[in-house]
Length: 163
Image 1 (cartoon, helix red, strand yellow):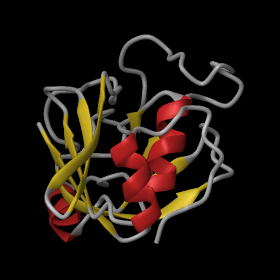
Image 2: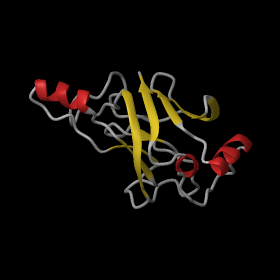
Image 3: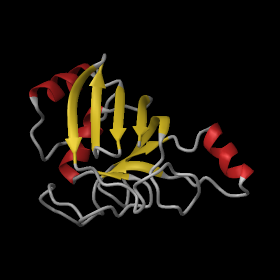
Image 4: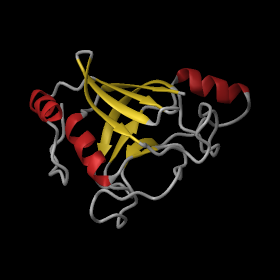
C-alpha cells in the first residue's frame, strides 16, 4: 500500500509507473555508497544519492546514543506525516538480534530510526539539505526526495541497510 502526498519534485517515468502500481517492494540503503535504492520485482525504480546518516556513519548501530545508522534487514512499518522532520518512514530497528546484543552488553539498543526529510522549516524549496551527517542514526533525504519515497514505499516494505 502506498501513501498519497503532493510532491514538490516531478516523478521520473519509472518511479511514476511504480507509484501507480504500488509496486515498490524493497528498499536498499548502502551507507558506504550513500545511496537509497527502490526496487520493484528486482528492478531498480529509483536511486537517491548523497543520503545523510548518523553522526558516526561507519559501523552498525549497537546502542542507544551511539549516533550510528543500523545495518541489517528490517521493515518500513509506518509513516509519520506529523514528524519533526519533513515526513518520516519508521524502520523496524531494533530486531531480536539487535536487542539480544545490546542486552548482553547491559545496554539499550535504542530505536526511533526513520528515513526522513530535513527538519521542519528548513529548505523551503524542498531541495536543500543541512550539510554533512547530522542525524542520531536515521537516514535523511531532501524534502523533495522524501516526498517521492513517501509516495512510493508502503507499510510492510522490506529494507536492507548495508555498511
